Amino acid sequence: MSNEKQATAKTFTGWLQRRQFLQASSATAVGAVAYGAPQAAIAAPAGKLAVEEFFVNKGDVKLCVWRKRFVGDSVESKPVLFLVHGSTPSAGASMDLKVPGRNDYSLMEKMAEYGFDVWTMDFEGYGRSTRSAKHCGILTGVEDLKAVMPLVLKTSGKSSVMMFGESSGAIRAGVYAMDEPAVVERLILSAFTYTGKDAPEIDRRRRDAEKYRANPLRPISLATFQGIFNRDMPGTSEPVVAQAMADYELKLGNAVPSGTYLDMATKMPMVDPKKVMCPVCIIRPEHDGNATEAELLEFYGQLANKDKQFFILSGLSHAATLGINRHRVWHVMREFLTYPPQRTA
Image (tube, one colour):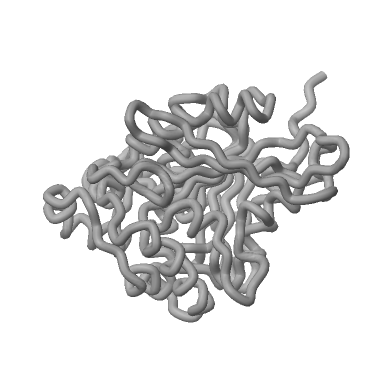
């Protein structure tokens, strides 16, 4: 780290210490805005859950996109929330998972209950999109977002969206927000990696970088999905979740692109906090080998917009939205996405 960056990180860390934030069984929150009543546009669900599916062409690649929202006799205008999946499970397994014997693992449906018009997609190489035998790195995913966003905006009648990204999906979402600042209204980065410095999982990927470079696809199995939940802190998720994820994914294929792993090993940082113009919320699971708190605080301190939040949530590991304490993530998301906009004179 350069002397200038070290000074910035030291200053910011000192500021946090002076504020004496507690990190225990409750969430640690650092922010520049106060929460208030939700925006009027957010309404309780009415009527039935509507599901729509689309396919968007990106050249010869078909991208699977779907939407969930509650609609009644009259369809009110709902804010759009777009969910961006990470490196291994597709959107269906990470953002819209159905777990036998459970009814509250779909992040899409939970956010729809909160009054959002919720969208997600499978990136090239994943899920029900074209499974090309390519690396399909982070920038490929950014191009996928650019390909589907005109459909989202036209169909919803909106000019901007709120965006949530998890793991490498947070990096995709961050790069997209830099490239398309007028489109991203608010941004949530969960289990985000900025530099990967001293992060155990990123160090492991760096050691395996040549393997990923030589092999555009990574094999997946039940053990792969069990590893996602047990890698950082066993016991923070239900074993049935990994099984449900494997059951979903392995029906669609037995390999996923290695490009995001390669990018996270060789190209970090990919998101410049000074170029992200919208309000940002960072969600740091207590146990996450993909980043250290120090690098995330460095990123947070440089964010351009002063409407920003930093949460450390205990009882959660990397795949926070599918953990036992996922309800804590829902709460943070809902509050950040619905705090009142700043008034002007």
